[in-house]
Length: 297
Length: 266
Image (cartoon, rainbow over all chains, first blue to last red; front, side):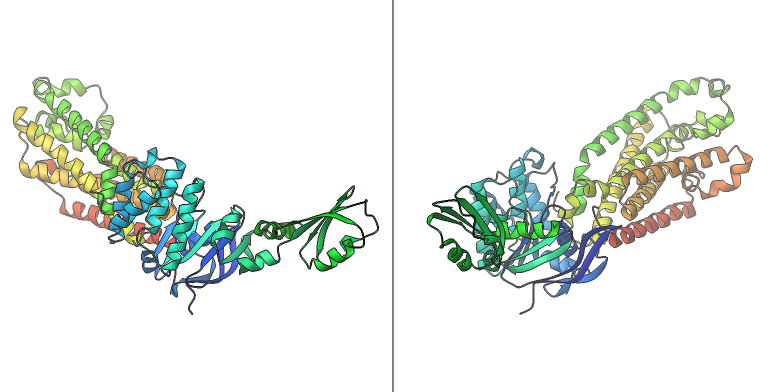
């Protein structure tokens, strides 16, 4: 199957400053692909390269198998884009905005846009400059989804939305994927990516750190075992066990963090009287943070 | 109105257009309303203490001609301040029509729609030209209405061609500013460079009439191409008008090329 988005060695420098370097991404159709990384890691640069707003220093990118430079107009007609930290025309009302965008798209999407606005609880009769951050964000989503594009590129789509509207957004993403579209979204809200994405790419300082299924991230996420013993335990060296990354002991309590198998830890602990055992679920956040911690050491 | 990029760009400046039209109309009416009483006085007496070079810089080259409607309107409006004002607005539009959208980040949204970059430049240029033609036409209309009231004795052909020239000259400087901002993305540079060049070329045209050393250089000034033949009297320099149009198209081409090749909004 042809990838919807493919980048090869995609590199962008702003003068001497690195935006992204040697980015190799492949996004399959029908996926929700999450893009994770802290601010300034290169997520927005990647999106802007795909939308032909920036020109790469080297490397290539294709969307729908088409070169992003040579076929930009066709790509953009089939894509819905919500830039990060975006702005709309402040003197236009919401209604004027969608009418203008639909006219430029030569698309009969105004009706669909009105339905989306109603669903997101957005009043289209208001001038954009009088919208709150959340309402502006909603209008950004409406214009991205309204023409039922094959691909959605959404840069931090849920910032500023309240939890109920966030639920609507997740529903919208699910429906969009159900009709066959692909969604590429960035976030630094980790539970969000965990919740909606099939695959995740983690980017840091402009380079990809890891690309994997969400499940695989979870499996390799660190787990925390908190033992409470009957007496203080001093003669078990948990830190020697394979996969253990941290050990904290305080009185009768020992907290063991591991990315490996739990079995040797349980067996080692079983040589003493265990009063209580709690385990923390491996969160993507931990996997994510451990990637950054690797970087710092 | 807001269904096309041209329409949207005009719509965004509908209020400035209104105010510029009102302002220029007042300027025109105030000037021509004094014409009958000034004609009674002797212009020689009024201007006798003013150095010739100073008068030339303000577009007054022949004091005797001021006693005619054509000479008076030409010096008060077209050969001087009025043209500079209209061209200044043109520079303000040209320098900001693209860069404002980049600065406010609406350009990212606009360019995520299926529209080519060359079309963004051409549509915004067309909107700017439409606004300037509208302003020039309004000035022409105000003068046409004033003509019988204050006995200016302006001809229809003169009024038509002087305002066609005014629009051409303004669009020329607006296109220069558009080109600088499209190539560099910097509106301050676009305003400074275009405004500075306009002032220089205007002084060259005005002072060249009285300073002999500058005289051979007057022909490089678009103000010379536009005004030297006195289009308000019906005498148009066709090569001059063609020159303004050709340079305008060249600046438009430069703007398209410059905007297409660079990163947007960085």
